[in-house]
Length: 232
Length: 372
Image (cartoon, rainbow over all chains, first blue to last red; front, side, top):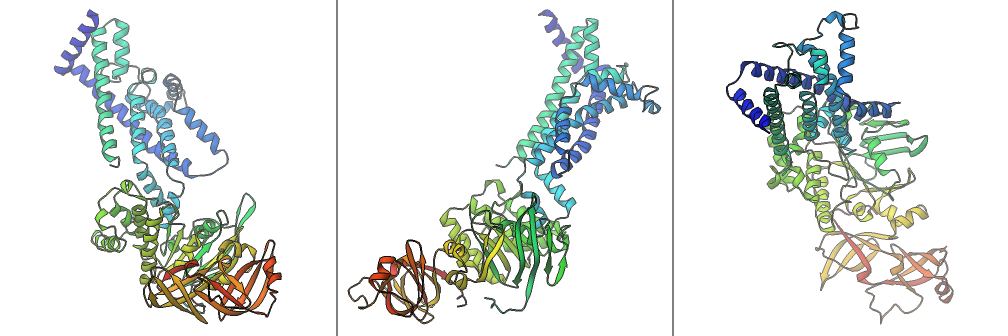
């Protein structure tokens, strides 16, 4: 019990004194996961919308693959991204393994199916004739897609939350492709794992609390937007 | 009212066919829609009314066929975007966007890239026209069914379409809301001289709004013509059974006394009950089962307010009863039993008296009289 109390005390001390190392790790986590979420949104919403609005042979299989991808184990993603970025791998020439860029790439791979799956469901959930109604209003196909995405904006916010929540909290891929290099590629989750393994529970608890607070605030802001947008 | 002979054809269809899963669900060899005319597509559910509307609006890829708008062939196969900017469509469900009423009505104008000030001015006028100005800032998700459908109609009309396709726009509304909305739509269609095609399974709606009626069955147009012609002279049993009312007389109210009014129809005068005004155009609908026939005294002791002498033009057996087609100066149809046919010795060419009560006349007010 003392361990936890001490850990919480230490956490607040580190947070309140704006410890340089903790601050650096927090900002890097935000940057890496934020960028990964952004990439996943661009790809996920586009692919989700196209699949939702198209009819083609094998569509059912594609939808099944996307849904399966929503539960991709981060460790597996980490393994394959590592192989791809390995010196002799297909993308080895990029020389980004054990860099924050590699973590962004791995996290984007994790988040993209989540965003795609939720976007697909959100667009499909719109009334069947809405697409025709928008076209009947004189819209081009591009305008129609844009209006549909705007109509699905509330469930798409859920996609943002799920995508960001999925990557900010994952550790397997980040540690494998980022290497947890101090002051360079160390993020909140990888640092927590390391400090725990070293028996530095106070610092690990501090990092855990920061991670929780961060997740809470970001989701609180998105929830606020979502609820404000909800029709009254 | 656009006469049947009006030469200005706005939309024309040739050999239009739509197939689903290899099955032909719509087959329209030819159809012409005249400028300013209101055509009602009637028929039971699943007979291709909505499919025809979607095909006419270029929102559905036909299997074959050609569609001409103002004699310009439109690209029905790829979805002609330029053509769709001249039309509007209103669906059964309002399909409003998750935005305010104003933004919904403005959506078609924004799509066309209209400036903010012009949008403000134009939308305000149409909100007024459809009686939804006080709702302008309200979320579309908080509207009643009638308000939502008014918004949907305003959104369609605000772009000043040359033709409007309406797919059962009132079917999900309660009767009072529906009645009010039909009245407003009728007024707006006439005032704006908008060409319209409306699909409905409610013949009263069709009688009220349309210049011409097309009866559809199994993807085909069984009969098309002026309202009175389709109602009074059904081409087959399907149309007759669907329209139900066999006698529809167009007239004008001459005088009103104690709730009973007298309407002049072609070839006679009819007494009926209804909320009408003197001079108002009406359609008097008489169901054949309400008409009584006699061979001698003209019902002097009867409560029937309408008694006419006429000649039997045709007797058609319809299973349990017979359909007797009379010429009373106007066409009148009666259903009688076989026993009555035999008892009264009814035969074609024979003179008889026909009667029906003023209360059995179904009155539909119309601003315009329909062609006879």
